[in-house]
Image 1: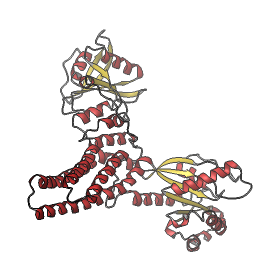
Image 2: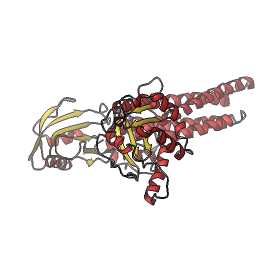
Image 3: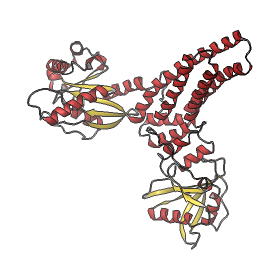
Length: 484
């Protein structure tokens, strides 16, 4: 859910537009029990009075039943629940109204048309208008607005948790606190510039600030490393399923996905291209990739060769790897894979080993995991005997995948993931660049040093929107749906 690349020089608001009252359907257009229309701006209450002329305005924050009539013809359009909010105590910080109407398309169109027919200065909202007004009126900062976008697009429980933390102001508090730290460091240097007379005292203050900036840089660098995990949560965690032909890779993917997404056949080379499927595993969005069976030979056609080439690339780029072996021919499988993957060092990286077709073995034979551990070099805790035919062992495999994801993705001493997105990282890296210039500078260039601390703090201010970021606002809020 990245907001990059940022769109430059977007003129999103016109000066006259800011003062208009906006309205929009905030629920999907289509048949439903209830549809929500939001209105925000200085004439919100006048719009409601024009639509509901028979009664006075409802009490603030109390839902009231009203007849909705066309302001020109007085035709009854619907009976709806009306809710009013007085600014600044509303989502946008302005006067707001909500119409909870019946969700039929004809009713929705009629009420929207009625709003536009009032004598009020109204305009249908563009994407993200309500959230942008909330930002403009100080109800949200940019990180919280981005959190709202992430909530809307969250498909798994862990994505939801991360987005909620961001909306609650976790990143806002973090980055504003860091900015205040840099401003404090800069104030000490500027005090030297303005009032310093004793060189010994000045040098002592400078080196104190220098040491604090060194520690600050380490803190930001650690945050950037951890934030890579939050990007995995936003965009999906890539897991590659690989192995020799006909070992059950496609069958395993179908079982994990709980639907038929990959062709299963005894014919060698059925899977030619990468098949990606997104699956919710314990709240994590996991992108499982079924890859072409790995093999060599003169009989391979161009398409299969290309599929195998892509398989190697997918294995290399994946965050987690699942190797599927045929347990009925385990030694030959391991030997062949070691030869094929000799340049990839696959078995020297974290890997889950799936031993398929245990239903074809005698009951106790497959339990000798120590031998398989010796052959593969993979710890027995990462080896899972399964049957894609009977589903035996699948539950334990999925549980282990989820457990490993939690260990790899969640932050230390935390049950949630929340970190910098691509836009935040851009500003954090620029901040580090200015701080590095400060650290590499000369103590005699204290004015330049103070300037670099100011540039660094400005980059942090841009993350939350405390410093002018007009060129990125359109890029951020245009990602939102209309009505939000």
